[in-house]
Image 1 (spheres, rainbow, N blue to C red):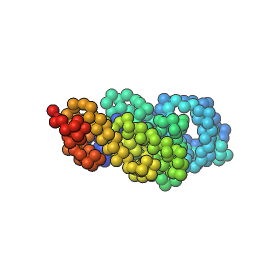
Image 2 (image 1 turned 60 degrees about the vertical axis):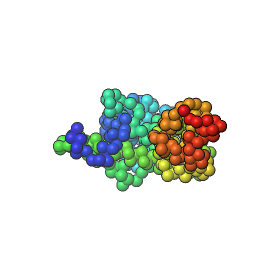
Image 3 (image 1 turned 180 degrees about the horizontal axis):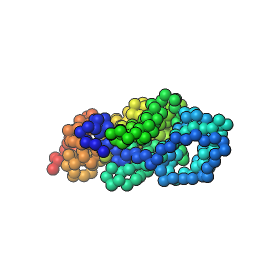
Image 4 (image 1 turned 90 degrees about the vertical axis):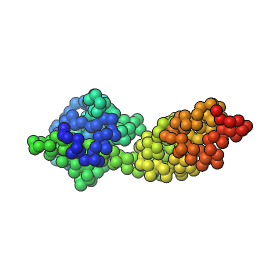
Length: 302
């Protein structure tokens, strides 16, 4: 690689925050006509196909997916698939095969840049993901740059390509998130199900140091859209719901145990007692100490 000091701060953040990083297994750019055929095959890696020109059909795990110019299909690992050219003039496409490598032990994994793979690995999205983009879309511009740079032998080319691959998956993650949000707008049953999922996530994880952003990512929504949808469905903002769940659990511990208040604060997800005291008083009009005394008929805390 290169000296860490030269690494841009933005990329340093991406590298440090991700448990797994994308690695290109192979890349190809091809043109095929209708006389070309392939037997069904499957791989242990992801395969991203971008159609530049022409039309084709992918048969993926028994499902036919018609694709045309500026379509991107991402096929999940171990899904049988077959590519059939439909255009008389042929089909021009780019294929990137990739895995995600652990930063710690260099083992490959189907887990990834977390936002991206939390979504594409879910049953919700099926055996493949499809994106429709324009020819000038930044994903396509970057994809072509990656292919060009892979052929370069200039100094630093390998490292530049590595950073571009990281950027590619950040852009794909954003595009998928936007498409996912657009697909559920107006579909109240689906949105209701996602909010119910997020409520269960909060109920099961409130003791951890989680934020609204963590919950939004769990259901693959942007924080702003998630916050708005949650409040419309639940009548309370997600942060207030999280605080309420924590305070309710703290009230039980204050009443039924001899735990120190500082320990209770940590056990219900607050990083320090001062913040816990502020939130607890906001919801109960009492400090944790006064609440405990009141619940115990004025007994002093030991």
